[in-house]
Length: 629
Image (tube, rainbow, N blue to C red; front, side, top):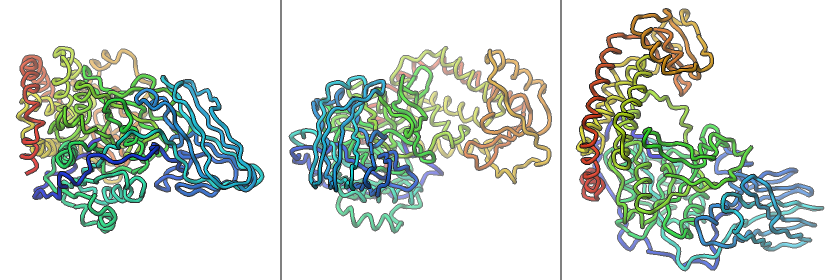
């Protein structure tokens, strides 16, 4: 997920402490066995449930990497972070066997069992060992030969008659001859505290830090990360591995691309992990992504999954794909889990991703060398486009289960936002580059979408969407400045539409006593007919008068359009938006919609050719070097 751009463009002078070409080793000597995942028993934050890591029945004392079970206690790691994603390792690597090892201190007796699941979640014992009073390393092994469509591995431990201490839990496989170097690129804009916390989380884990060759922080803001005491302290710990860069605000696309460009220029053989600044970072995820990338049969983009920051046990989606004919990204792959508590359910099926968002995603060096750099589209769809371009060049994306970070829940952000401009414009650009667009079908779809905004009295949202289409029609030159002018223009234009402003519920410009709440019933059938009916009602004022309050969950266009003055709860739950019927604005926007979509149908074939011809120049290092300065 790329970094939102926030306010206006900054005017900082770009600075860099770029590594010399030999600062990142081309490869590393591998150990006899490579640790691909560790056993963890607590999360990186108190807000995270320990049961995402291990479930204990009975008394126990947990630390991050150790646990001590009281006599009679039992523990299992059939959990989100406790499982080993066997199906993915069998499908995408040549690893034939995995070894589970741990150091035990057994007061009396203990039993360790290695379990496996299949696509339906049925469990079977793969290996088992009984231990009497002793202290030492225990090892169990499993063949990776029965997991192709799904299934995972985990262990269960029982303390019998006395305490059992557990430490140094590791899943390991035969190591490749050499290990690939890897560096992390984080872009940030005025989220200095969040960014400092993310970098500190990476530096807090010595094992993870040992496996990282560099951490590149690209700061595009005015509230700079370097001013934070925590960042200064972390910089001392990272030493020469830290590279801190300043540049103008070029959005998430510009920030991530700067990191990719700097790292690949310093060492063309170095993998790059792109990471958002505002995540709750699980450092173990870096270890797991890098280990997996070292053992795939072909260079592979390896993405982390996203857990919700405000609901930390919930998975956003198991794997995503894009539907370009509908201009829709973030679409759930068939059979993937979505918005699911990982305390209640496990991902058994192997689901293959179309792309992975850049909240955390590893890009192999070979991909950057062959595919080039991202498009300068500022914000939204840059990760999607890059994933599609990589796949067209022969590089698949794997979204690896049991490797995740926590990112802000999407449904807490209101859809009526300036970001809709970039989402619309960039989705059209990506579709133009990577699909055969049906101009008539897309025009019908866009007209329907804009009509829903108009009857729902979201005139600013209609303007924002139309501006995205119109700027797409301007051709690839709209990307010449990397998006800075577009951001300023769309924020300025939205100011003409009062319903785009969020108010405190107590200070909204309506008499509170006159607001009457109206809840929605079930979604009506024949929505196309309902849309026409609501549009006629809105046009002729055949709506319920007075001030109506509508909760967020009921703010569907087909409900809101029954009224002419509505106070709608913002998705953030921190305020309200006030929508009011305005026939003149609706008429002007409708005429603008018709003109724009006619032009879209007429000019689309030419525009597709122009955008495709422009890609080499837009993604070149020379173009990005110009933008950085």
